[in-house]
Image (cartoon, rainbow, N blue to C red; front, side, top):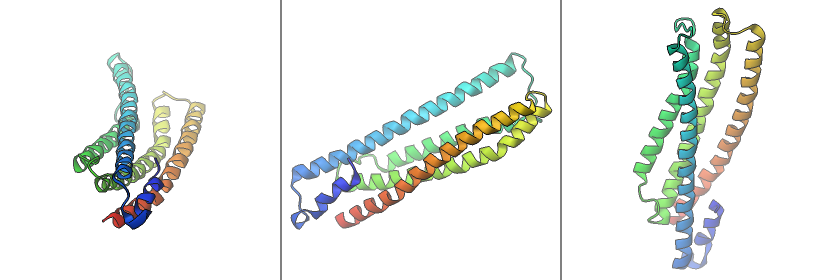
Amino acid sequence: MTFDDLIPAWNSSRNAPDPTQLERYKAGIAAYLGKEYRDFLVHISMAVGLTLFLAGGFVQYVRSGGAFDASKEWGSLVFLLLPIAVAAWFVRGFVKHRQAHPRYDLSIKDGLRALIDQNRLSRARLRLSMGVLTGAMTLLPLITYQLQLVGKQRPHEAVSMLAVFGVAYLVSMTWQIGKYRRLLPEKARLEALLASYE
């Protein structure tokens, strides 16, 4: 279902589509939102799981006697904790959104309001994600410098690390900017549909 599929409901004769058609639109909105919610939970679970796995490996390394000096290698800790902080903010936003729209399946109006809020939340997530990702990338040279100071990284390894992370950053930012730009016209369409319905 695309949001443009809803427009015939408003353009039909006397703006009074038959009840079966309205039920189809309502079910389509509910199905779309349900998929968005499931996709979010899958992605956040994978990201948190990977981060906790890496954090667990780091803790195990330190517990087994691995050398780590927090005063000289604090950049690595910040780099590791950033995804956890972002995930916590994402989950908080998701919970608040679901509390604000507990029964988005009751009517088209409720569904549209939930879609508009979901669009707002998606854009906020992307802005935070891009900001944190950019901040993390500016932290990366400091991390490589710290690792070299304590003898855990050679200069050519630092160059390789910066190159790999740099490419990943460019790919990720390109994808996120593209997604953000697609969400803006979608927001305008949804708000126009809701305004015409009210």
